[in-house]
Length: 293
Length: 320
Image (cartoon, rainbow over all chains, first blue to last red; front, side, top):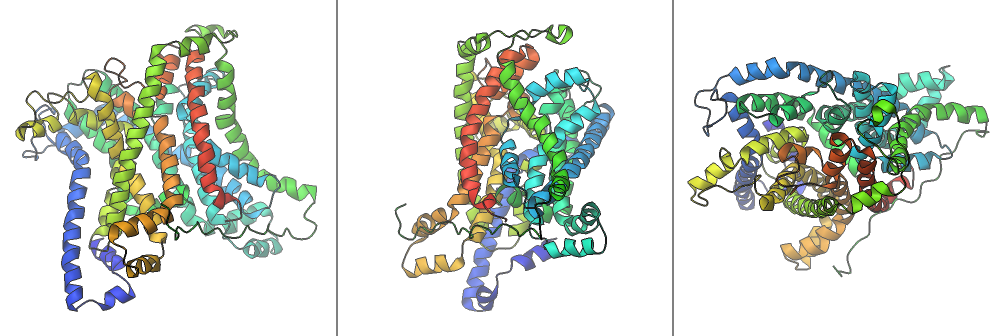
């Protein structure tokens, strides 16, 4: 990854021309210092992540942890998988479910808001922006009552539906911002070919929006995977227990085995780490697109 | 800030409403088109609208631990509101929330901006380091808080171990066990979590500033600090507003972090509006009083929602 990034950040025209000259050498020396500073910043800010790993890798049940894993072992991970493996699967299932629900709702809505000049469409966009500000605990407070009546407490469906709310406003805003740029003629052409509005949407618009859909899906996945509030409030038994709730209960009881706790933490951070590596461009696009645009 | 060059945001001209082909007024077409939006609308009504309304109602109802068996929650006027407002814990939580939010935003924003400016320089690995720095923000907040809880442990924590080695403390700082330090510790952890988000958005904003503005400013003889104050900050203002408002929204309702780090303790020193709502509703099962605190939270958020929308107006006022 390094060579490509370096190539991409290589300064453009004017600066690049300076390379090889005295000025250019000075600049490169300067650049080395900057890189060193950047790595130092990285080390400081990522120390907790390092510490999490180191604690998890040492078999001393995490009491007196060495600065470096002198005798690394995977015992803690085995224990973590034994006690929290089910929770990890629950998290995965719930997060994937939330992504499915969220995209199924957001994609058509975003398309409608972007391409049809509907009376009241502006109000819908406005409302979508507003919903992003409703505190989750407030939703949980009222949702619990409704869920109790609908028998959705302690159910996968209930948690999936609630978690979809974490990504929906974001996804609508993001997808809409992308879909306004789809030329109307493309859809018109499909309509002329005999497709109806909906099939045109599925066959033409969705494939064109692939990247935006991936970005929205990734973020919804991360939001749902990280969800703690709904997991905590909408479950009263251990029937549906995502890993965030699992690790919370893990430390809520007297912690005797920090190694296993940290191993669980590492496992629950895996999706974030994986996405950071394989889906970097989508993440960057999502953060800027969802908030600024 | 009174520089004459302070440029305003480039607002694209208000979009011409998309021409709907032919006699678009046809009711059937409009109806079909609304079908695209209807599912999402229904969902938002159920998961955002309903809770908002229900919370207001609940705050005037008497909920007890037996309510969910009997189904009875009689209206009790302003009892919940009186009970909450006369509880010193509420006032404390309000104060803690204010301190926590202000401290977090100040730290996240300043450090995030500093890093954004730093990473705007061109150097090897810049892009890579910037990407990896996002990790703290992508890890589930509860998980991050649990890790920090271990790091900040007074006896076994690595932070105190380091401070002891450096001779800066003997008995170790009671990061999470002293009521006078715990809130500060929570702020520090939240700053750590929020830095990447601030950095990325502000970095994005910095890249949008036209280079010639900087060149013009330095031709005029402005030093780096002067350029930062007179060019960078004014140009960055819309982005700054967005980042601060979004930061405010996610910080004021904080729950995960505090619960996993301190559970609101010691001695209620880190109780915030979020944790108090949770405790009242889900531990004491007094959903009525919980709803009162929740409503206060909504009210506070609403004020800032207005700010956010004003900052965003350039966006949804027109097509793009």
